[in-house]
Image 1 (cartoon, rainbow, N blue to C red):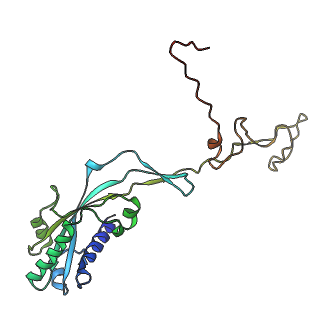
Image 2: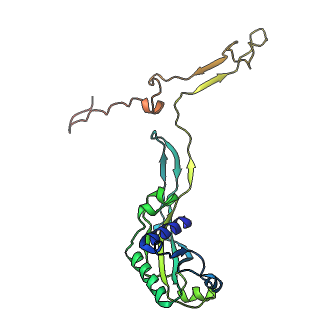
Image 3: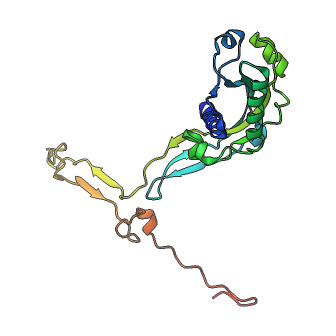
Length: 248
């Protein structure tokens, strides 16, 4: 899920005009060594904090259906996580960095959720909203100054970005629907004279009680598209009695 959020942000910033202007969008840690190797205008979107949003944890689960409408799997509900990014702009002059950062800020503050056409993988299949908040970091996330100290770089203008995205639940495959009745295999019994009633391995049905038969139910016909369970006729509802009327 994390890499899919990264790809959604990269596509969002690329559509804002950064890609057309030759600006590279990366997700590297902006350390001092990385900054020394940088040669082109760059927007760095560095992920430094991941926390679960416990307030949105759900219970129960969902069902996965095939093309015929049968349940093929059951899935636990998704769990939501908050990803916190440190967004910085890198160029040869501070004025150019501020221009890039301003363009990024304008794009992010006007985006409440990642558009569906930017989502890939599980995020696209779930069809849930991926919230984007460029107003700052979470209450429990480390401060930007602490992040710069840990990276060993010089403090510079940065933008805090939070993304709340769902992590797909675990799917468990279910058994296929029952479309046939029960089959009983019986073992040949010995004949009265003590000899075998036939070759048990052959399954020819020789001997007393030997054979293979399918259980049938008088109230059921041939299995339909939904199996025996779907073809069962349900009894009609009993007639309603009026107030004061005795039941016969």
